Length: 226
Length: 357
Image 1 (tube, each protein chain N blue to C red):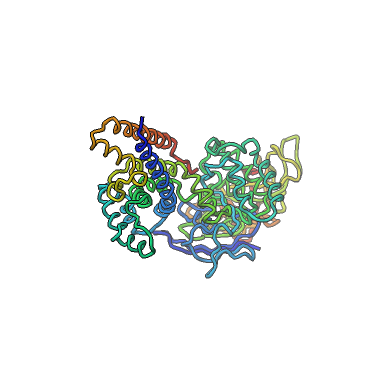
Image 2 (spheres, rainbow over the protein chains, first blue to last red; image 1 turned 90 degrees about the vertical axis):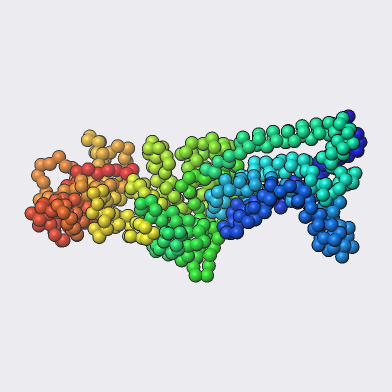
């Protein structure tokens, strides 16, 4: 039903979402923990920064990333000095774009879960001999697992639907940066509605199933601290 | 060996400034109205509030002084929080073993002790249950077992019976009493319930508004006429005694207390049993001569060791021959007519004695 190049685009999209989600969790969990715990007064500035992708047109994010990552940008020049290719128009560049674009969707549910925990479980763990790292991994993470799972699924789903950022920094290189949403756009431009239907339906069903998972998780989200 | 506490710190608009010393065995109760800073003291002793400074020492172990701050996880102090605060992601066994697993040293010995603790607390049947499925009393018992399993050097109990209904409390209190008598470690208990203090405490620290008002043995603090407590309508003393004889015909028991015998109902008592007697000041009246024919069973020879007058009322501090202390609440008129001053010999007629078995 799907043409080989559409299957490629779909495969690339899933790979992009998976890699981005992994990076998002590695960055997002410590960031969410810090935001949930810190008494730093300027915290809200960082929170606003994390939330920016919720309101900005993706093209704006893509535009700045393009300037930053392109051959003439600071990152591009630094890489060129090391004898490396610039990241714009590459899969790695797409991952970086997706991470920025989906960050609030991962950080916010995890931050909420950490806030809901309160300080008590960590205090109990401390009096039972667990040091800071030990209590983070054996108490905070397991107790916040639903929030973390919700963040991961939302980050994955949101990356699947990414279009504007990819268009700006990824272009349309088959097998490298041509993701499903771009392929659909191309099909519509070429008035090939049948092919657009096929891919769109796959994305629609996939996104719906992922959101069903999020809401099913949310049903049991309340972690009882007592 | 003793637990020496000296803490000061400002937390918002609350200032904590306390110093007391408690024996390193038995139960020391921190008593006071809510907002007195009792829980603050426990948290600081546990090492959970870095904002509080001062000195903390248990025997020769220094937890905190001018240039030391041992973090909570290395103090080996068990803490039972007011809410049981069980880990929701672990079953009962996982909760109880949490501290044990993180403690170095003799694992096999720790295991054995843990099993004994589990049976002692009657938790055998609950080990694979989730905390969410337990009753309030069961959670409390699991929380106590969890705190005790890693063999702490000191146990902190923050209102161990709060939030339980009257019946559950009545069930848990004697059990808790048996437990703390059995433990060979010092216990710091926060409470604002007199019955808990009367039953459990050996030592009492009275707190109010972030300060210590008085501290000493339970008997000494309860009977101290210099404290508002002994002059209040609820003034009460607690005496330690041992059952000496049983009178089966009348269902009575004699309890040896401070060199005299006090007669109490024998319900469930046996010879040799140690218990506490609680006597309210308003249940004690004074006679200069031993009353001839009276329905009052307990007439004890005493010496007046102190007197405070307040309005029409007068509170007398009385010494038993063996050193125990009683309080009597009488009218000032009676005290003057009987010429009851310090040093006077008299007889205390005790209308009612509560047995705390």
